[in-house]
Image 1 (cartoon, one colour):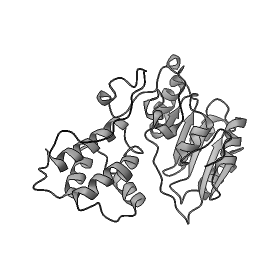
Image 2 (cartoon, rainbow, N blue to C red):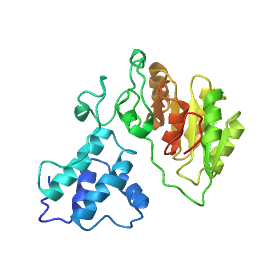
Image 3 (cartoon, rainbow, N blue to C red):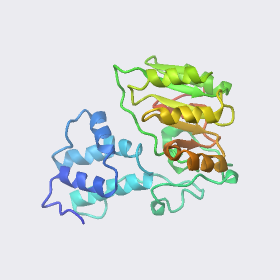
Image 4 (cartoon, rainbow, N blue to C red):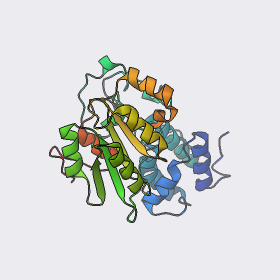
Length: 274
């Protein structure tokens, strides 16, 4: 049921729309990113909040189509007009770009033969139009106290080189060469929501079955699953349901873009952070 803007505060309107879209998890992230304890109390401030911190937080927890719907609905209820002013994401000429607004909140992995496109980097936002869904990775707020650990389960030389070169000083990049090393990295990074694990399904540094068994024992760990076939991922989810929450990335996603998914704003072609 819609909320009449004449009867509700901007905060109440925002809370109701987020609840209707199952996107309430985005609000605490947006408040932390904007340095606020509570959402804005005026419409003007709320519009700025929507365009800034909330939009970024939504893209970390829901499908881009859902994020656009949330922003447009809040604007409509605040302003009382149909034209929300929400910035639409440009469509690219591929099957995913067409009719993005009509897509469900989650997408199945693409067919192998649909991965033949070449795309630009994540900074432009084009990743949200790719066949590889980039939504679903939690955008973690920086934590100046907890140790951030990125564990890389891979023998891919480019991925390892980019990870070690691009990671900020506060991040400990660990090449998981054994289960003991992986478990140690998970334990050391457990206090930070920015910690993550990258699993390379084509060239893992640890056998995948042992890696996945270890990850299921970890609490609330972010996982990027790189270069796993659709068939293998479907079988993995059947055996380990929580793997559905791990972000699948096709081979089209470059090591530099993986660093951006982990939290870097930009990574140049040499792997150095800007």
